Amino acid sequence: MDRTPPTAKSDEIELYIRTYYSLLRSSGPVRIRSMEETHRGMRSNLHHLADSAEVDISALVYSALRLPDAIVDTQLMVMGQMEEVFARAGYTLVDWRSVRARARRRKYYYDEQSRTMAAFVASVSDIDDLVPCMVTFQIEWNKLHERLNNGRLRDLLLGQGALVPANSVELRGEIERVLALGPGELERLGQLWPGGRLVANLRKAVHRRLDLRMTVLGSGLGDYRRSVQDWWANLEKTAEPLNLNERPIYFVSSNTHSLVNLVTGLAGEFQAEILDYVRRENPEELLAELEALPEPGGGYLQNFLYYASRLYLSSLSEQNAGARLVAARERAVGVTRVSDPHCLDVEAQIFELRALDRWRIDPRLQILDDEAWALLRESDALVLNIDYPLGMAAYHLFSQISTAVGRIMGVYVLGKAATLNGRVGDVMIPNVVYDEHSQNTFLFRNCFTATDLSGLLNFGTVFDNQKAVTVRGTILQNRQFMHVFYEEGYTDIEMESGPYLSGIYEDVYPQRYPINEIVNLFINVPYDIGLIHYASDTPISRRQTLLSKSMSYFGVDATYATSIAVMRRILGQEVSRMGHLKRGGQFEKMRGGWDG
Image (cartoon, rainbow, N blue to C red; front, side, top):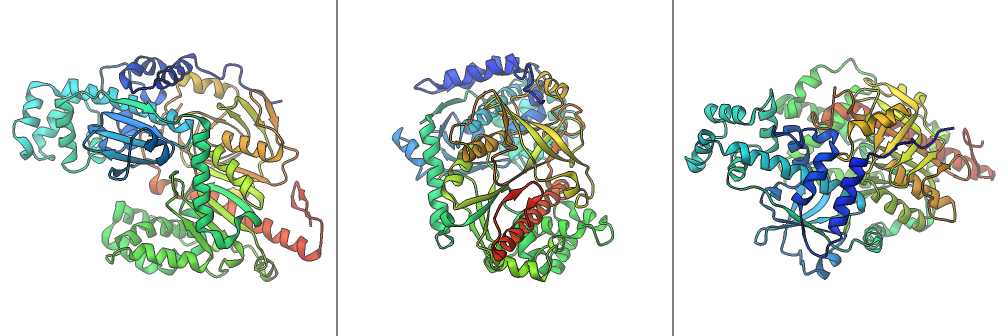
């Protein structure tokens, strides 16, 4: 029998978490520097040079990508769940500037006059993500401050005002020498702060240390629930003609592009234009990838077109032409998009299965015969796809959805994860999940197996019957912590599965999810549970880490292999369900699918 790992906690990580939650209970702002000691003591795998005088460029880049660029000018970070919470504390965001983080979906607003940034948090996971990122960034920024106040480099940065070119050979060489940068690290800083912003930010680092403060408003559970209720109310209003509270729902947590690309046929329709654009403009150096594509077959070209179509559409000169084109194709195949929720930055898409165009869907979805398509035309089922939320926000969102829709027919969760025994691009299918939030070990029947994906994945390997651990945050891990799980056979590290399984538990049992138990979900769950993770990080081997490379085009193969497997499953399940209803049969969930 699988059991909870005997030492599933790291004392240093627990001390750090207790420290910042204790400090954030204060009625006023607290200084980030008061958290730095315990942050260093945690010895995070993603910030392993925290207690060194050496600049940790990887950690600096990682944290900066998850914070808005205005963080370098910010003095106070204020966190809250919704506009109402900010307004109660006297923060009126109407005139504040909307700012974004490049690698984290979260709503931010910035007030230049007060140098205050407002961050919308959907759950405690946002706090567990935002606090370590801010501490990491401040530690590394202040290392820059110390090192850049070197006589010669300081003179080069400040002596000529704004006239020093960012590409000056002398300046670049001196920056590399003073910061002791390794191969490629200056280029990574240049990608983080492109153009003149690199020199501009280094000048700011010369002038001042960071002394960030932060505070949390409305930290009660009720505020998180109200923000999700507002999100759902906005979604229901936008999709009112669909009558979500009466329809069978296949719930998918994935991303905002793959499922839509599979059903609209837009990339295939504009194949010639997309390929011509790539050959002419070579965006993101994709021409080399295009020329390296194997012979037709295996979905190589389709995957390439899906990725390049985003760049092509954004390049169209007429204002919003690409967005209008996408919206028109989505409407034609019954897709409703809710892209600006009221509080949470979680986009939703709703598909009417009976409106799918048989001749526009991805060729790899052509699994139904004429009779099956005729049955699908009579379906009243919907696919509700949401942009995967962070951590415990998944629990709050699924709890709201499961109580508001007509009937849940399946729960399918796709997302990135770290792997302790595979390679980047591999796919992991767990049937055991240990959740750090609830300390539960969930046992469940995953509706997917390696067979469902092995023929769809061109580069990676599929591992099923895996054991996953849901962690509280990416920075809240160290090598000792990961080795404990590895020794217990846990090879899949991610952030959403545990909260989703807690929500599923409450959907099928008349009580709140338990704490620190082995939870058997093999029985009583009347619908599919499908969890699939693709590896974006190998933290133990360090062959590939979240810090070193963006998945970008490299992740296309795994993204579409998993998305196709989910859509195939949904189409097959719904055709079987409609066949039952057509024959007047009893509708029962059986181990091998819908009983025929």
